[in-house]
Length: 199
Image 1 (cartoon, rainbow, N blue to C red):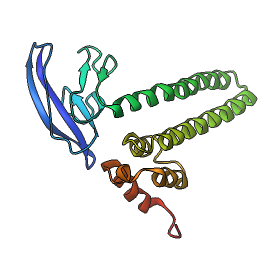
Image 2 (image 1 turned 30 degrees about the vertical axis):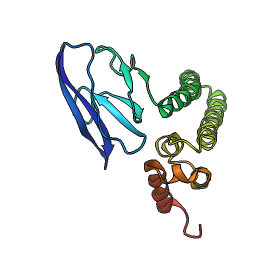
Image 3 (image 1 turned 45 degrees about the horizontal axis):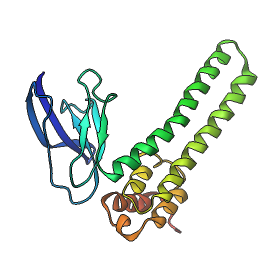
């Protein structure tokens, strides 16, 4: 079908287009940009802030994205960098906690509908435990991948609202190369804003 495809990055609370292409029915096309280091980029069919976007961790070389127009984001299959593979593995495991949360939400809503306060309270505790486990998984994954750009990215994107001590532990575990990377520097600056003064 006819339309535009945009390669974008997220900067200063907005999506910036770094390459675009007018498509006229082609099944395959190529977009590109100059990367100084691995970075999360986005593929979109619109410049609108609320447009659907395929997120991927780009690096030098070729990243291949196969998808459909009908299910642009959900059908996306991405082959590319090591960081992309690490991010996908992380997201796959994280989905277990998110699915558990949805199951517990359903149980909680049913209990509320039946007026079973005891079960509502019990399910709330289970949800808190599940959320704690989810955060611990994210923290451990970041620390275990301290020599990869995906580590500070996860800290910033998924657990930025956790206890600052955990974020500081992640930052201090990063190898010098990763600490000096784009997301390592952003994490360092973020920690300066949220850490107590005596640290």
